[in-house]
Length: 172
Length: 261
Ligand code: SF4
Image (cartoon, chains in turn green, yellow):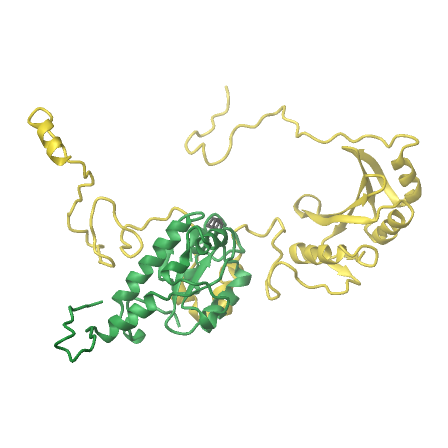
C-alpha cells in the first residue's frame, strides 16, 4: 500500500494516507481471506492443524467458515470423488464473488495415487484453481505459504474482478 | 534341438512358468464328531451340499434358493445372531457364476460360520434383511458393486456409487480406471456433454511431461516465460544452478572468508 509521510500540521490537522482504490480493496480482501472448511480426506487433517493454535491461521486474517456464502477461498483438501464432484461445484457456485480456490495435495491436484474410476483426476476439471499445493499431505507451513502466495496474487490483481479474466480463468 | 523363441521384447510377456508351482490352498478338515460344529451341521441337515472346516471356521456350501432357510436355522437354532459380512466374488470368467457368502458369528460360543452359495449371472438372491439388519446395507452394496438383484429387499438402491452411475465396478470386467461413462462422469453431470471438448480427456499418466507446455511445466536448465510458445525451439538461456561462490583457496582465501564473517 502506498504510504506517504503526513505532515499533520500542514494538512489541516487531518491524518491523510494516499492510496488507490485497487490497493485499498485488495488490502482488505487479501488480509481477510476466509476459507470454506472443505476437508475431503487426509489432507483435511493438515488443514485443521493449520487452523489450530500451533500454526494459527487466524493471525493472517484467515478464519475458517462453515458456509460458502461467507467464504472467499475454497481450500479443496483431499480426494475429490466423482460422486462428490457435483457438490464441490455447487459449493463453489454458492460462494460469492470474488472467490479463489486452493487445491491442496496431490489428490486434489491430479487425482494423486487414486488412479481409479471413482476419483476426479484433478479438481481443475470442474473448478478453476488459483494455487496448486503439492504434497501428500502438504505440511501446514505449505498451506500457510499457499495462503501467502494467494495474498500476493490478490494484491497484484485489479479490484474489479471482471478485469482479471486472463489471470483468473473461470470456466463458466 | 530346442525350438527357437524370439528373444526381442521378452519383457512384454512373462516367458518363465514354473511347472512345479502349486497355488497354496487352505486345508479343508472334516467336522469333528461331538464338536459344536457337528451340531450345526446336524441342524442344517441335507440343505448343506458340502461342509468342512477351514482355519477353525465351518464352511457350508448351500443352494442359493435356500439361503434364507439356512440362515434362519443358524440364527434361531444355533445362536448365530450376528451377520458380520456379506458379499460376492466374481467368478464369471472362470465358472460363469458369482459366489455369495455370509459370515455369521455366534457370540456366546465364539464360533464363526461361513455360508457360501453360487448364483448364475442375472439370477436374483433372496434378501435376509428380516433376519439380520446388517444385511440391508450389505445387500445394497452387492447390488451396487456386482449388479446382483436381491428379492424382497426393503430399499434396493446403489449405496456407494452415485444413483445415475452405469456399470458395476467390482466386476472383473470393469476396468480399473473406469469406462467411458466413468471418465466423463463429472463433466457430463456438471457442465453437460458439450463441454467434453472444452475440458478434455482425463490425464491418467502420472508421470506425464510436456516440454512444450510452458504453463504447467518449466524446463530445467532453461528459463522460459510463462505461457510462451516454444514449439519452434526455445532461446538458449541456460541458468547456472550452482550458487556456491567458488573460492580459490590458494590465493587470499583465508582473508576473503574472514571479511565475509
Ligand atoms: S494428497 Fe495424500 S494426504 Fe492428501 S488427501 Fe490425497 S492421499 Fe490424503
